[in-house]
Amino acid sequence: MFDFAWSEIALIGVVALVLIGPKDLPIAIKAVADVVKKMRRMAGEFQSHVDEMVKDTSIAEVRQQINELRNFDIRGEIEKAVDADGSIRSTFTEDPFRNTGGDVPQAGAHTIEAPPEVDAAPGFEAPAVEAPAFVPPAVAPPVVAAAPPPPPEPPAFIPPGSPTPRA
Image 1 (cartoon, one colour):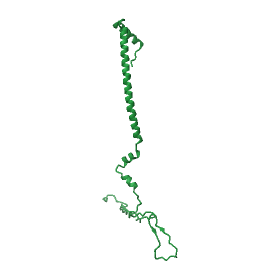
Image 2 (tube, rainbow, N blue to C red):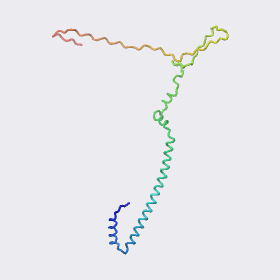
Image 3 (spheres, one colour):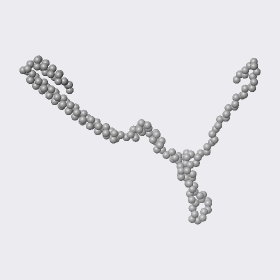
Image 4 (tube, rainbow, N blue to C red):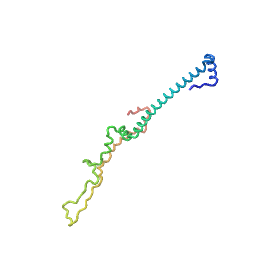
């Protein structure tokens, strides 16, 4: 704690010998030693109590942090941050090829059977034919805008002194 050199200790001893006197010097040294021992003991107790509190607090805190890390749901946190209302998730969970009466038929949903008026041999059944998986809609050719007409060509020769044409 305090850093004293031998020369400093010798100087303090000489001053104490002169001020206190040789008769009372051993009693004074014993009193100072007792005070230093008592202060060290109190500091040691205080340090041990502080260490104990820190240990209890840090262990409980470390346990709590470890439990938080174990129970941390990174997928849920990212979903909350990116898609708070759940609209993106519902977009991906819906079946885009569900037959809702639109233009896109579901693959294998329709089969074509032989008409009933066809006379077939006895014991013969016409095989079922599946409809094509995807029927592309009719595509119109792209509309191309007409090119603007070229500008009129200037005359080949303009005589000097004639007025210049204005556009």
